[in-house]
Image (cartoon, rainbow, N blue to C red; front, side, top):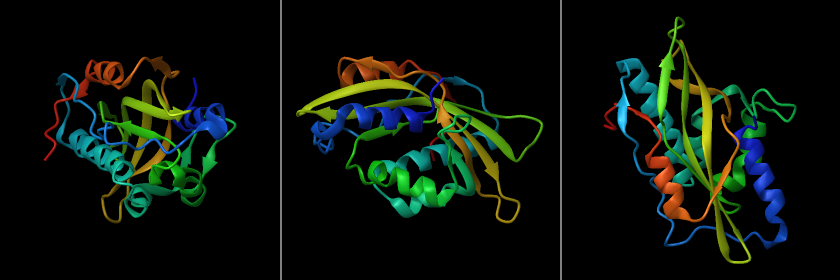
Length: 192
């Protein structure tokens, strides 16, 4: 199983010099909701909204907000030999993604679970990855998984581990990608 950051790296490598800036007027940033059929507790909904805020930081190209969501000791590509360790390394490797210059990555929260340790949560949901090769957009979809940790000092939830939870699946176009996302389960959390 490849992590989301590994998938992004592979997409960038495959696109090579033909990759152009993928932002366009025809690329809406908000992903469709899924069937809100998964019951979530109030605390799980807090993490669900934090995950949505995290994704919005990338949609808005807001590097400061993106950084604020990361635990100082965060690990992206978690569970792989290519793990990126620490906020600084993650900010450096994701700078182009957050700026929207290298590719378009959109995700939305799906299901959040909190187990016996109330300060740790896992969030899993769908993403759409868009690259552009020789002027033609290419899309793939998959699932991410993020482990969140709640800080004792301020009760803020921050990303501790992040990675992919599925192998990316190429799809024909944005409409097919959105249709796939819309079919993925989602917690019944109000967006607020």
